[in-house]
Amino acid sequence: MAGQGLESVAWPVDLFENEKIRKLLAVQGTKGFYIYMYICQKIFREKGYYCDWCCADGVSITREMCCCIGAGAVEETVNLCLQIGVFDKMLFDRWGILTSSDIQIQFYMASGGEVGKIIEDYWLLQKCDKCKGLLKSPFFKESGVNRSTRRANKVNYIYKLNNDDDDLKRSTDHIFNNNKKINNRSDLPSSSNIHSVNNIIGRVFLADGTEYQVTVEQEQRFRTVYPDIDVKSHLLQMQEWSKSNPEKRPSRKNALRFINGWLGRNQKDMEQARAVSKDKAAGRTAAGAPPNRFHNFKEREYDMKELEKQFVNR
Image 1 (tube, helix red, strand yellow):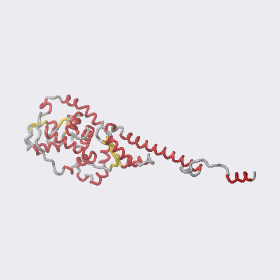
Image 2 (cartoon, helix red, strand yellow; image 1 turned 120 degrees about the horizontal axis):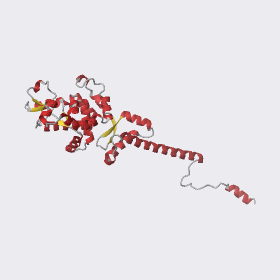
Image 3 (tube, one colour; image 1 turned 90 degrees about the vertical axis):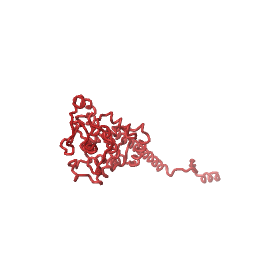
Image 4 (cartoon, one colour; image 1 turned 135 degrees about the horizontal axis):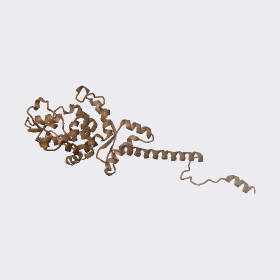
């Protein structure tokens, strides 16, 4: 197929000044950035400027990376990259591929302009002066695959992507709802804003290898609902427990129920302990001072001196 892999590629020194990359880091952290970089290297190594993508590729990427990142984290990262424009969503929806104009520019510059044929339907830089002289071929002519057939092969994953985790979409919108344009450098979030976004107070590790992050706002609500327990301490216990028991971790769907169940049980235990303590205190008040171990017998109810007098006067 058209498109040749590269032996090496140079990354721009201002990569971390790119707003899209900063969004990715703010929402997914270094784990998400690592996944993005791995996919980009796969693109450059295999086909140069794009790669095919479906749900099974997330599993294979996880195996290739040989680390603790799960397939769910890979899928979430790809989802986010498509939402914020790190990968081109239009080409993904149409052809099921991952690419971007930045990737294609790097591909062209790294190949020294000698890239041979490219697939015209995949190429985003038709009007780029740096890319004059490229020989473009229509997809169906180059590969012999019918367009409708290829789209049908990708429709299941695209549907899943567009209906994926609503929490991820809401968190992305919440973090960057004040940004007007993706490439407007004046709207770049400051480092202090990114720090406030990552103001995470607790984590629960999930069954798919990702984690559910508990924010300060959630912790404050938990303290209101469960006033008799140390919520922050229990969040730390949950984090360590889920880390040590991977086979018992909750799914993302049940993460919040897991947290509320944990806190609710401890709140109930505290209420019961308080009730027992109250009952004991009430019993002590009614019976007077509690006996100690040296005075643990029932005292006589008669007066010994009075009995002696009665005996003498008999």
